[in-house]
Image (cartoon, rainbow, N blue to C red; front, side):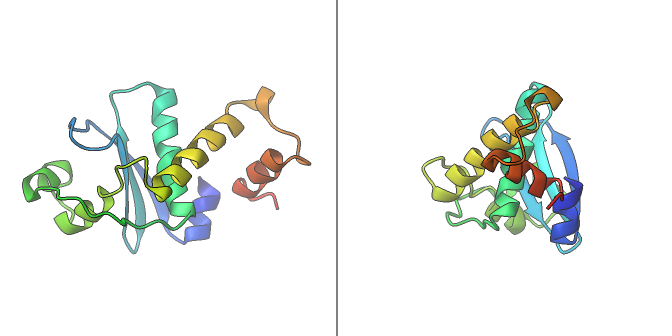
Length: 140
């Protein structure tokens, strides 16, 4: 994650949060200084890693919300009272798995969590998975 933070030029802050049922289990909110990843705190560590990787996928692919769903001002204020509700509303628009951006982020999360599952599962550098892992770690 340090390499991605360096590449983006801003700190990545991970924030566990008890997510209401009506919102996604994770979200990425980008500001000029930080990339904040909010993720469900009441789930397994493996699921948390997947949620975080999914949101990092959105960062890597430079996704923005294409479908700005209606999110009430009240819900946005409950989730993050110190942030602009419109900023939250745009981030929460990414909730449909039939959306191409969601598919890309989900695929990235699946591959990334498998690549970083542990030293016994490190793919050889000559494979596509190995090259991806090396790039994400900054070992070009």
